[in-house]
Image (tube, rainbow, N blue to C red; front, side, top):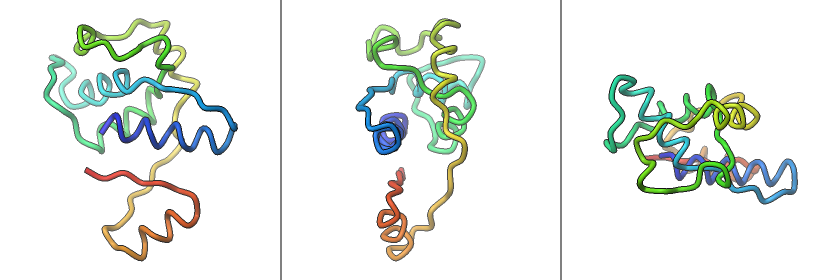
Length: 116
């Protein structure tokens, strides 16, 4: 879920700002899992819903400051990293029905979607 959402966020960011900025899937993956089980973070996957909520609430930091490093998989990022992420949040996410016409319409309007 985190990799998909970071990809969509990067796409939308590039459309709006014309900049190709890499964001951290590891940061979003940590926060999606923290929403599911705040008392114990393990590599146990997370739902799309919790990952979207994490992107709305915490945002996502730049990959350059929290790169994918398997040894950091279950490590909480620092306050400084959370501060960076606050500048990269989504305002809203909409649910798309599993309907080919609705999906095509979404894409035609320039809005990608994820599912899982």
